[in-house]
Image (cartoon, rainbow, N blue to C red; front, side, top):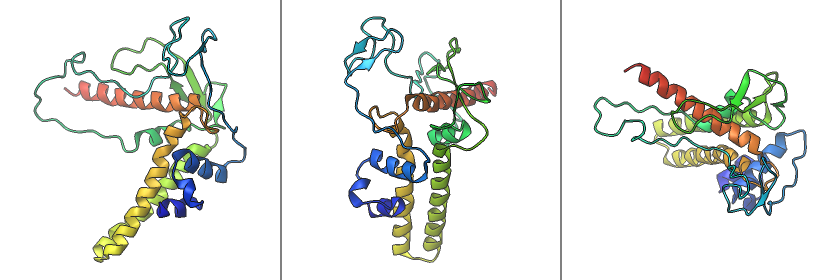
Length: 233
């Protein structure tokens, strides 16, 4: 908690919740004021306008989904990958969601009403089925946005702390190892919270378009990696 407080330069009790940490970090670097944000009393269907209870996931009138697609849902049975496999290799994306924020320049002020190269198809399937639907969101390419810039700044800071920890380990400095490990974990926690608060309805900095752009981009990256791996069989 003390390491979080030092990184954020914030009161101690501001480090209890991700939304507090995110808003403090963003406000320090933004040149606009985020809406205050109020938790909605109903889920309004974008398709038909019907107000639904917050715990309802499908519109009671038109049966449209009231939530955006999240992570991949991999079913070994439908993909025929169940069973024993030999010579298996693990493939892991480093910081998948933060990487997508950077790759597509996803940020509040970079949204574009005109098509750009940084395009996100939010209808990207959650499995490996063919992509039959398209709904595109675009982000500007001219300047790095606040969110990806924040991710990069924290990544650079964390790498610095990890290097210090490595040096402390080399010198047998046990207290130094603990100190720098606490600091790099604090930075990791702040960065990892960015996606969650974007999807937190009612939070001033929340933005569903950005949240679903991140998850859609992540699904696209996973699908492309999987298709490439399948082609190597």
